[in-house]
Amino acid sequence: MENRGHLLTEQLNPNSQNLDQLTSLEIVDLFNKEDAKTLEAIANARQELARAIDLTAEALRGGGRLLYVGAGTSGRLGVLDAAECPPTFCTPEELVQGIIAGGSGALVRSSENLEDNRSDGASAIAQREISQLDVVMGISAGGTTPYVQGAIQAAIERGATTIYLSCVPVDQVSIPVDVDLRLLVGAEILAGSTRLKAGTVTKMALNIISTGVMIKLGKVYGNRMVDVSVTNNKLRDRALRIISDLTDLSREEAGDLLERSNNKVKLCLLMHWTGVDEATGDRLLTENQGDLRTALTRTMKVASSC
Image 1 (cartoon, rainbow, N blue to C red):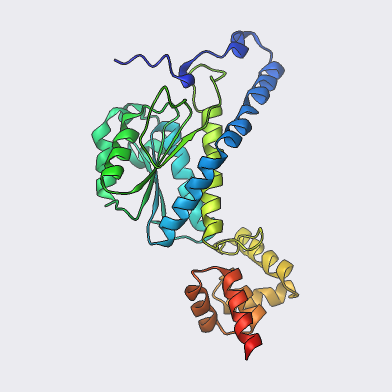
Image 2: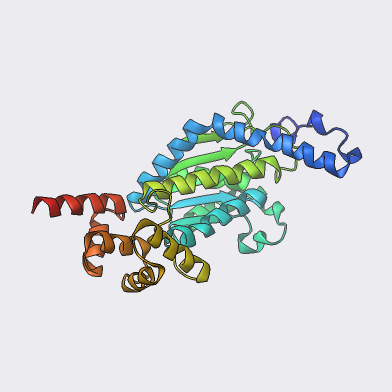
């Protein structure tokens, strides 16, 4: 069995040596101080995060998919981020996917022993018929998870774009990928418990990447989620507020227009601002790869030249 004690994620944190003797308030203060290191880690990886956004947006624009692969906490965070994309950005479920060692059952109960099988990771890639169109992101706080490494190697062999997210320096674990994300938050307060700072910084990075990609794909106008999926009362309220805030329409008028646009906020706004009907608006958005601002600018230019 390999000794992983040299890994940054397994080392002892000198700031928490007396952890079991702290008061509750001292525990909270220590967590607050240590969690501040996640912001520094994100800042230090800003170039790699930006490259991950650009490569992924390009792949998805070309018909590819983004797949997160992880085990334990890392896998759960990938599944969570993937699951949040359809309601936030109205993406098809297959566009962003989360793969976790052990499958759906591992989301609600510990199955960390399943992370040790490298071939299972490779099989998960084969089952999803990964190709050169796709992006596969391996997530492994300590960088050594066999399941994730097997998946990444299989993805490389199939020509996919590969990203690796870990919380250890490159001299401890070397991964030959297109984007090597090193989020160095240091040793955990509770030694080896990477659901803490490592988990927090992973969630932050995934938020940045998936949201950045969707911005690049035209699913945001200003800072509004104009591709929000109107599937419940909360999201319908948000859709109505977006429409009312960006136009001169009352809430009732916004609701009428939203109905006429088949509950598509982006289409609703284009119809209002250009006067086109639903079918024409749909065509214009398709021609402009779903980018509302581009569709609006081009439509206005055509109108002004007539």
